[in-house]
Image (tube, rainbow, N blue to C red; front, top):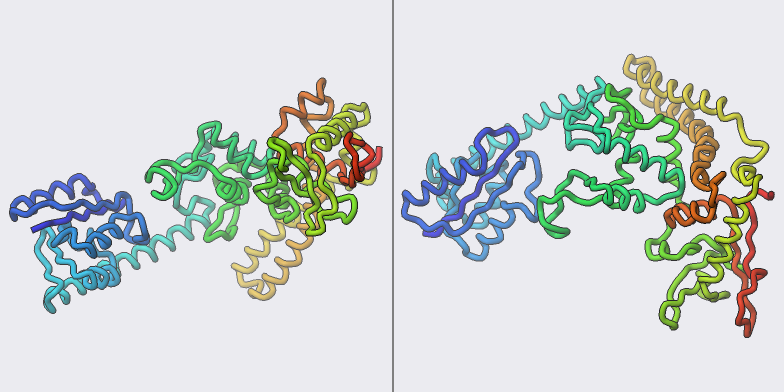
Length: 460
């Protein structure tokens, strides 16, 4: 008889996969059977789904192709976690043998015994899950980590700072404020040898290997209130955290305002071209997009509308725009481009923002004490958050001046510009000027600077 072994290692069980395999193999040998396959789900708790890529799903697929005659497990708790699991096995017509005894799912008695064991396993799983959720909620309310994976920038306890990762997190916030994209931050973190700590799925690489950073996973980190020192439960802030903040609240809010701005999103295919989605058509005002031409190695900017008002060779336009930006930033009064004369009182705004955040915390306390109804809490919270967004916009703009920090006052502005990522170069251009690309005219062979308009956001 052909026997398949199924083992599962749960984080709360002492007997490991190797020991389970040994016991199951001994039983198969004692019966004189042939071992046909092994299926293992390592470090899988009873509450996690058995989706594609798991040993469980592979076992069911092989059962459908008659790969084996019987499944052997140490006990039913290792094999079945719910009534649904039992029904799945029954439907597959799988015969089950455990080290503790055989259960024939094709008989009424065997199915009844298995159903009782599966119901007990499901009850224990749900009860454990409820206890775990209550414990997690309590820990979060006390400002402690609510469980889960090790957060990037911290040790496994979620409290102790892992300094090399923490500095990468801080650099990530600075990069976004300086104009870099989430994808650029991901490239930076990957280049430094950091990874997400989440294993790859089998379809994206060798299963079990750590996944590299991508824009979305970087965004999840930078949007997480944990990094400004706030504890959350189910994505809701529940109070101040006991672990140290990696950035101040002002920086966190400024970065999240930037990330929430729909105007910063550029289609992935256009980021190869410096002015794609940034410069405007000089005829209709629509954005221009970069792309290849029929000539190998040559690029062009075209109006994004179907009318195709302009189609201009990209290289001379980019060279002119960059030269103009560098020349302006090389002047002694370049700092005047950064902030207008009527800039708001930032100290007053910071003080007001701190007061508004304190009022939000007080609302939560008042609601917990019964001083506010849920309707009053929602109304008051919405009003305070609306004002907080208004206050944070000029603060974000002020902090966003970091995008020019590597250029203003540089001994060699050209070298400083070339050292910037393209994301940051684009952000500098967008912050300083509006670029309009006009038609070159029929028969024009030489680049005419007059056909590219550069309108400074602040004259000077």
